Each structure stands twice: as C-alpha cells, then as structure tokens.
Length: 377
Ligand SMILES: [Zn+2]
Image 1 (cartoon, rainbow, N blue to C red):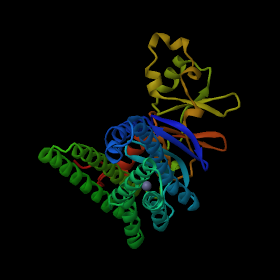
Image 2: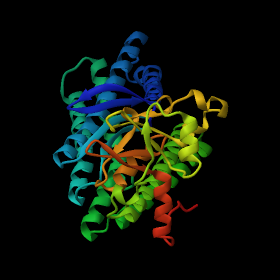
Image 3: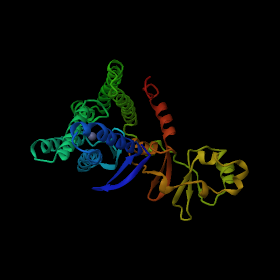
Image 4: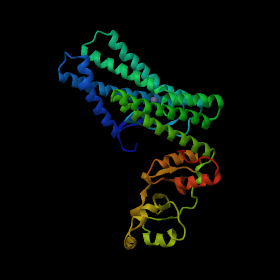
C-alpha cells in the first residue's frame, strides 16, 4: 500500500491513489464502454458510450472518496488523527493514527462511510427515476446508483475489515468491554466470508463459466488475508496493553557526529555491542539521522575509510519519530509500515532511544511466552 500517488488534500486529509486503482479505472471504463452502456443505450454512438464510461468512472471514484471522507470527518470529530486516505484495488482505506477512543466512537466512524454511500446511491437512483433526463445521463446516474448500493450492501457484511465488521466489533466491544475478544470474533467472521466468496466464486466459474466468479474469488482472497491481518493486529494490541515506547526501546543507542568514519563506528561500537540503529548528531547534539545495520552491511570493507556515517544515514526527515510516552502499539505500527522497521525516539529535541519492531517482538515473546504470537496455519 506504499506505492501510492498523492493527489492532494481534501478537508485537511491527504488523499492518494494506489497504482492498482489505475488498473481498476481502466477495467471499469472498458467494461462500461464496451458492454454495459452499449446494452442500455444501443441507440447511441460508440463515442458517446466512451464519454459516458469515463464520466461514470470518475464519479464512481468520487463516490469512493466521499465514502472515505465520511469516515475521516467523523474520526476527526471523535478526536482521532487521520494519516490519509488511499484508494486502491477494492475501494478506499482511511488510515487512522492510534486506537479508537471508545467502542461508540468506532461505531460512529464505521457507520459514517456507509451513510455517505447510502445517500449517494439513493440520490443517483432518484435522479435516474424521477428527473426528466437525456438518456445518456439517465443511464450513467442509474449505474452510479446501483454500484453505490451494491458496494454498500457488500461493505455492510459483518466481516472485518469491511465496515460491517467494524460495526460488529464495536458493538461487541461496547457490550462486553473486551476489544481483543470482539476483534477475534469479527475477524473470524471476515475469514468465514472470505472462504465463502472464494468457494462460491470458484463454483460459479466451474459450473456456469461465469467470469464474475473469478472476481468474487479474488475479492474473497483479499478479505481472507485482510481479516488475518486484523486478527494479528488485535492480538499484538492486546499483548502490548499499557506498554509505552519507553518500555520497549533501546535506551542507549550509540550516537556520533556526522563526519565519523564508518571504520571507526565498526571498531568502536558495532563489533563490541550490536544495536538496531546508530544515531547521527549535528554539532548542537540534535539528531539528524540514523544508520541501520543494513546500510552498514552494504559498504564493502575496503571502502570503510572513505565513507562517513553522515553519507550512510537515513535522514531524520525520512524516519519514523516516536515519543517515549506514547503507546508502544502506536509507535510500532508506524515503524512497521517502513522498510527500516525502526523509529527514532525523541524527547525535547534530543534522541533518547531507538524503537525496533523485531526487538519489541522478542521482548513480548519473553514477557508472554505462552500467548499465541504467530498466525495459526
Ligand atoms: Zn468504509
């Protein structure tokens, strides 16, 4: 999900599209122009069908965006920070920072998107039915209304990570007060629906040669994967419980000026004591970057005298930053989204630690050795 193109900001929320969406854009436009609109409006010319298809696809794209903005606006009202919205293969994803403040906040946020889709679907259908429109406009409005309603119904299946699954999770969480249990149930439902879609889709293809069945199976497979990821995230959250970044970070990462040679770093620091990251400082002692073991490994031994840590470091602007007092679950989630798997922990402008995902996993394994840490096969 990292290969996304940033489109800009809407209502202060960064919006991007994943490259997979370009594929979907092409597929939808093609199937509308070549199949659907020639069927609904055989009297119109091919050029008109293509124009209708492009406009319908663009408005469909806008509907998905509006759905995600519905989630984002409600999340803001409930005091959450939104990192951004990305449109990808199967719709949109709004990314939030941190945990939901309460079950009822999650419920409101989960329902806000489908509410927007319901309004849009009903609006387009009403337009197609009631207003005296040119045939081309009516067909576009009709398609937009039905696609919004179809997606709304699918999205309301009580299966994580779909919105219906979030509704189910928040209700269970609110009733019993146990987030981990609620996540487990809703994620299990997600897996179940994923398997049903795969089985049903393949059966449709095998029995009737319906190509739509393959599409359903692919969606089911994504649902299965995503539900598994939700279940794992829920387990990690439960195990991290009240831990803070401070509890899991390396509190004594070596720090050095940017002109330190790689040879010196290896001899003085890396050989005697291994760390996940080496902090690079400017003359005032503020952190300017982090050197990772992977970056060090990439330098052949004969080049050590020629390279300084300043040339090797990942600059602070490209690093995930964390605060020692924030929830460990939040810092780790941000760090895990990057290749380095690291966060630089900074307090009052000074580096105070390095948070590493793999170290944290090891610490957790020693703290809770008997809990199920890995996805079951
Ligand atoms: Zn949604």
